[in-house]
Image (cartoon, rainbow, N blue to C red; front, top):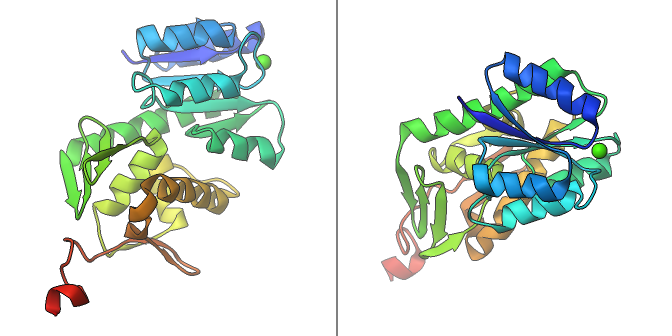
Length: 238
Ligand code: CA
């Protein structure tokens, strides 16, 4: 049974979400504030965390940052709840490394669908291959670990899935819509911006190796086809 940790101070929402998650077969862990939520996440390592932004003691943004900063919890998918519909909050959610967000008021059924989609994607990513080597980039699928020139790169679970999806098929062009479907598992309005934001963050983290991910203007993205260091390069021919 997979466990989902819900960090939310509004009792009614907490109980509603708990009820629907339990109905869907999840074990539910609950925390009424950020501090105890973070503690539970570290000790229980749930399969997914639903995190409200406005929380007592430690707000959702701080909790998100703390979760992403620790190797113990950085891999746990985070779905953020936000009271405001403003774009800024949504972007902030992604800037912080959350995998997804839902705007309040939300339908509990929709929330459960999102949870399932995130978890399902995580599973299917892990079953196909164990590792991907592309030039100086190494992706260890089982251990959810990425390194460039043997230096570890810390990615959120969404960034990891994006990278695995593209790196599994070098040279293939992925439209934003396809990436959204493959990585998030569903579509919604404004998705192009979501995909762009995550790809931008992924590239930033890849630093000098960001060129692996090419932008195909007006279409989407592609993982560079040329592989080994020096191969097909002018230096190798000369
Ligand atoms: Ca709240």
